[in-house]
Structures are given as C-alpha cells and as structure tokens.
Length: 298
Ligand code: CKP
Ligand code: MG
Image 1 (cartoon, protein in one colour):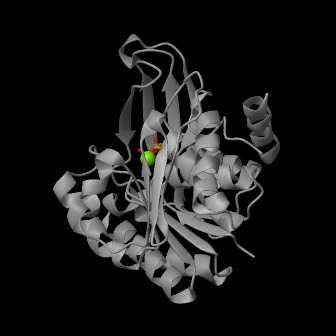
Image 2: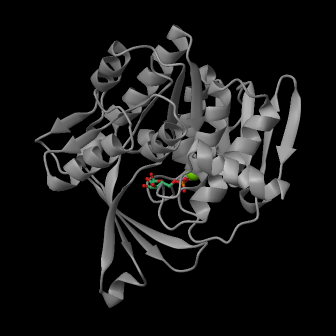
C-alpha cells in the first residue's frame, strides 16, 4: 500500500557557512522539494514512494542512500549513465535569506519521463499523488511526466496535490502560468504561498491551501475557510519550510484530520524544519510533534 507517490529532481546540495566567494568548507547533503516532502511524510510513518532520475555517479548514490535511510521507497527511481546528478549550492546570508545557485541544466533529474511515472504506478496506486511546479520547468519530458502523474492519479482516484513552488531561476511568471494553469484542471489540492497564487489564475481546484510564512496558513474548501497561526520558533533556516508544511498537511489528509487540524499539523512540521539548518534534517517524527503539544500545553 502506497500512501503517497511524489516525483521530481533531487540533487547534491552544498551548504556553505558564509559567502561562497570566500571559499572554505561546505557541507554536502541532498535537496529537492519533492524528496523533502517524502522524507517528512516518511518520518511521520507514512508509506512514501519518490521517483526521479539520478546519474550513475557518487552524488546520485548519496541521493539514493539518503532517501533509503529515511525509509522512502525508491523502487521506481532510475539511474541513467547519460547525464550527471544535478547540484544546488545554498549560500546562507541571513536565517531568512539563502542565495540559491543551480547546476542542474541537462541534469539526470531533468530526464524524468512518462515511462518513469507509469513504472511508479505499477508498484501500486497511491492515495495521494504530490507534484510541484519545479519539475515542469526542468524539461519537456519532465513536464510530460508531471502531466502523466496528474492524469494517472486522477484516473485512479488518488487525491492529486500540487505545490506551485515557483522558481524564478528556472522560468518567468508568464511561462509558469502558461504551463501550470492547464495542469490544475485535474488537481484536488493546490498549495501556494501568497505571492505564488497569481500563477494559478482562474482555476477550479476545490481545496486551496495558502501559506503566509511566519503568519501561518489558510485553507479554503467547499465547506468553508480556516486559518491557523504559525508556531513561534527561533529560525535557523527557512529553506524547506514550505515542503515541511506540505508534508504535515498531507499527513493530516492521510490521517483523516479536518481542514483546521491539517493546517495545524502543517504548521507544526514547518516549525521543526525552520528551527534546524538544512532543508529536511529537522523534520519531526510523531514523538517530536508530541513535544510541541506538551510545550503548548505547559
Ligand atoms: O519551497 P521550499 O523552500 O520548501 O523548497 C526548497 C527546495 O527543490 C530545495 O530543496 C531545493 O532543492 C528546491 O526547493 C529547488 O529546486 O529549488
Ligand atoms: Mg515552496
């Protein structure tokens, strides 16, 4: 039984302590919006499959090894000898501002294809299919893969979730709008930050989740609108906060929580993520979430 299928590009990630131009040491880890969500869900005990393509190289092995260690199923992920695994460089400037540099043009991850998606569904129909607006920006075949994932999920009765995740280094607002809007016709849950929402244009997605950063989040469904505040934590690194929120929110869906409780879980998971440096390292287990409840009740 697969709870969630997600797909996208996961890269090697270098995180420096300060400006890259000064050189010095950098930590090597992995990053990718969809695999961040996958790790978040897996830590909460859900069965998650991530599909993507990595090169037959050491960084690709690091990606696969990390996801396996986090109990993410990579049975449908592929290794290609034809391209190298992409890289992302994180250059922290303040706790809130991290400069991001991509070395991912023509990468293995951008070779994701419709066959990869079909193979993923052969392992079982997921309850939720989660995709983001990063993958369609990578290549024509990656866009086709996202389109296929939405199509197959919709046909199979999965809940289809889409996080806009606009990346100005990959494409313009106009390009993103043109590509993303048609995809939303078969999406059940749309997730966006306030500044990303215009990219969705006029759409009929029944459940819209809006992230307001430190001001919490709002969900609009046919039954009503709910908002919750974010937890107050000391921020170490906001990268990955959105993905953490999505992991918590989708976990709430899987557990049958009502919309407001889903938001609360999203906020709680995001609080742990921003309190720790790194995209996914601080993502909580269920026991960690209880710590937050205890603190709130004390
Ligand atoms: O929207 P978030 O800050 O949660 O996303 C961060 C991720 O996939 C990060 O892991 C990076 O690799 C990326 O977004 C990206 O491609 O920009
Ligand atoms: Mg995001």
